[in-house]
Length: 146
View 1 (cartoon, rainbow, N blue to C red):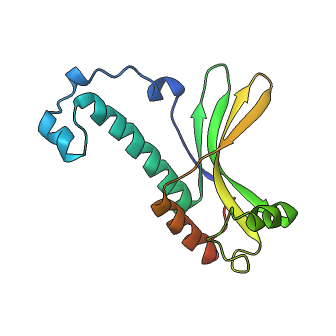
View 2 (view 1 turned 90 degrees about the vertical axis):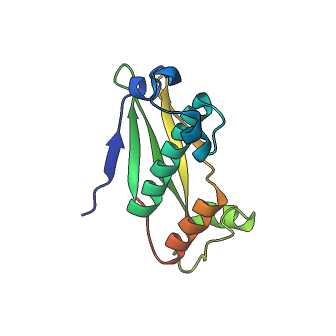
């Protein structure tokens, strides 16, 4: 039996106030990573963090959980589309890079799910073309996500 791997951190850790003046980062290092200022460098670090999370999800079939306040949580997970829903989305061009026979008529997309009141809400996550093509290659080679 396969179990999902979970990586997590608290919401407070994610949104902890950032004071770039206290970082031992000079402008030369920030420029090396494409940032003009230390504050831009902070944004680059957060963007790169999410890139690594999505890369890990695609490569290692993980679900990423954010523990929130009051025993609630939010997650990034792979949503599977199959059957008639897959056919409908495929005919509209949703999974154009997926070989439907190799993928066994399944398509996957990363979703963000969170609690709102007593309900779950979810939104699709759109990834860069480089990650998307690599993701589709994994699916076309027979990788399945849970």
